[in-house]
Image (cartoon, rainbow, N blue to C red; front, side, top):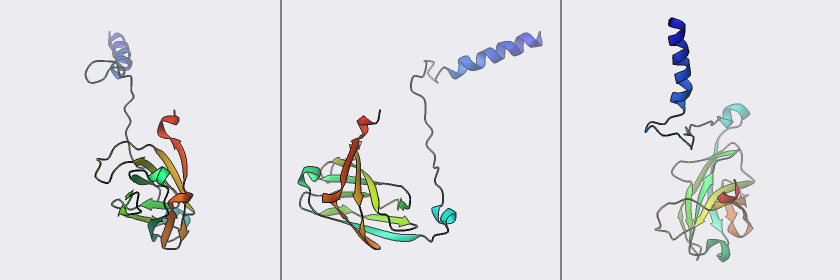
Length: 156
């Protein structure tokens, strides 16, 4: 008798896993987001340094009515939580600031981007933009030298 109960319970586990809380089959898996961040200073032995970025140059075909940039963390830098969103206006004005903590100065940095006015609500970005960096602790990003990568919809 106990074997039958055990077999019955084992058969129920896969069935229960296939149903969501509302009783319907779940076609989109639920993703749990958690940090996989490594302390690059600890693993490289290099000290942390702070870098500030400023933008120069005009690329009206990219900026249009305004350009919202979000820094994408990648080795050797992390973005400071309050300093990874920047808005660039068509006339070169910058709103927000870019402050990174790095184990060495990056040669290039990447942003997710979208065109929007300064007061527009945050929304899904368009794609990736990779930019060369020049200068030292206050580095410069020439927006005319940035390369537009794929749009997110192309990453299927």
